[in-house]
Length: 317
Image 1 (cartoon, rainbow, N blue to C red):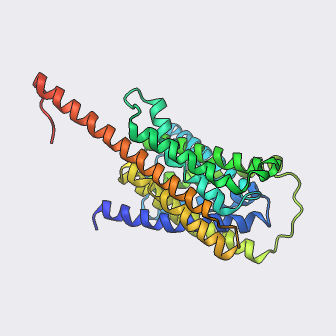
Image 2: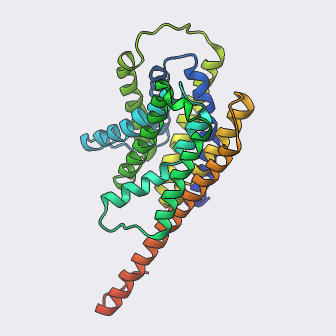
Image 3: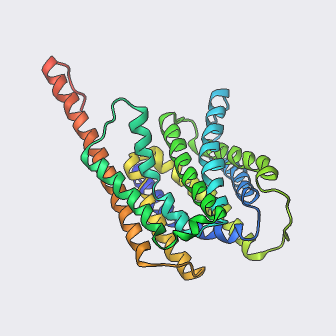
């Protein structure tokens, strides 16, 4: 099968599986300390994925530069990105966390606009950003009073920080991707991201007072390690390296819908008309931003081609 075809299969897998992880995280953090739970998940997943990657491909880049880069990406995407979402879900519903994380592509575009002089706003991007943030505002239509609860507000803020940090980590990973065994690099990110959370857990989680044997929470941990981390994270890195950013991040459209529906059906989380409007607004906002971003790049490519033709520079086909 063509590599791009495999990348699309990986993307479909991510769209479904990562939508279910919000539910599994919610079940886990109701029983275990969040950073201990998330750190254990990613640390074990990193070891499993690393052994599997080396069994398939012995090549590996263990240079100081590559290891430091994978540590940074792991810290941003997993220690902060996944860790803060896990902590946030201790206080907010899985569906709400997923809707906020649906903003990730918007944060990615904002980062690109700020970090690159070649990027600029256009009408579609502005409209998409405004619509997306309005969608987030609709989430709280029926929960304004809850914002006075410091724990709930802290959980919301953590999920926002997590989403932004994931976008930053994704941008760094995309810009400095290593061609040497990318699956092993993903394993390094999981390993270090989990290790940092385990180190920080005694400080951030506080004293541990919980029974270890809790079947539902342990099952959610096993599911998250196997599907949410080992398989889905490897699939994400593969899809992200083989597909354009606008397509690779399309999972952000699907994950919140899967998470909201599962949260409603299994955990009986509230589902109102405002939840539906919020999802549609965020969905439309991300679509408009991606459309505006693609148009901008298309216009830039056309201008480069036109200028090259004027000065007699050949264009590679």
